[in-house]
Length: 223
Figure 1: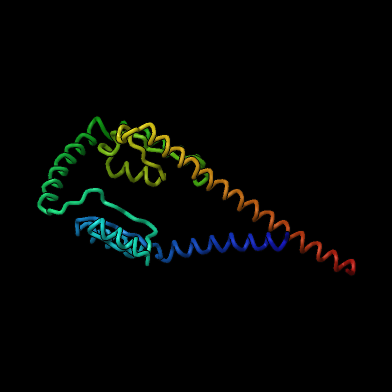
Figure 2: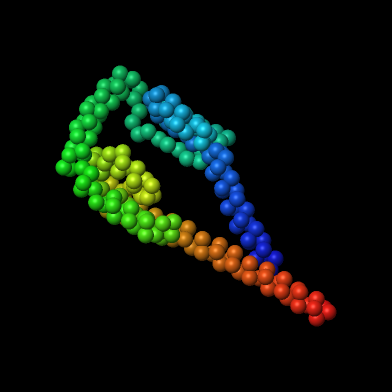
C-alpha cells in the first residue's frame, strides 16, 4: 500500500513537472491554415518564439500532412474562407471591411459597450471562483460577434469563456444541448480527476509518514 501511494505521488509530480516544462520551453506545435500570406507572416512573427509554428495556405495541404502521420499539432487554427482567385478574395475582403467599419461605428455608439453588462457578470463570476470554477461559462449571444470590440473580446478571453452563438445553427436546440452537455461532462471529469489526484497525494503522504513512524517505533522496540 505504501509503495503504491509513493509511486502515485511521484507520477503526479512528474506529470506536473513535464507539463510545466513543456509550457515554458516552446514545445507546443501550432498549425495555422490561411490563404492570405500576410496573415501567415503576422502569426509567425507574433507567435514564432512561443510556439513551433507551421503554416499552410491550402486546407488540403493540412489534411495531407495529418494523413502522413509523421507529426501532429498540439493546436490547429483554421481560417474559414478560402478563395482560389486572389482578386475575388480582395473584393470580398474590401466589402467585409466596409460593413465591419459600419458595425464598429454602431458598437461605439448607443448599441455597444455600455450595454455589455454580461461581460461584467462573467468577470465577477470568474473572480468569485478563480481557478476553482466548476462549470462552463458561455458568451451566449447573437450580437456579440458584430458589436464587441477588441477590449470586450480581450476581457472575455481572460475569463476563459466558451462561445455559443444564438440563431446560428441548424437544429439549434440540438446543437446547443450537445455542446453544453459535452462541456459539463469535461468540466466534471477534470474536477473529479483533480480530486482523485489530491486524495492519492494526501493518502500517500500520510502513509509515508506513518511508515516512517512505525519504522522508528519498531527500531526503538528492538524489532
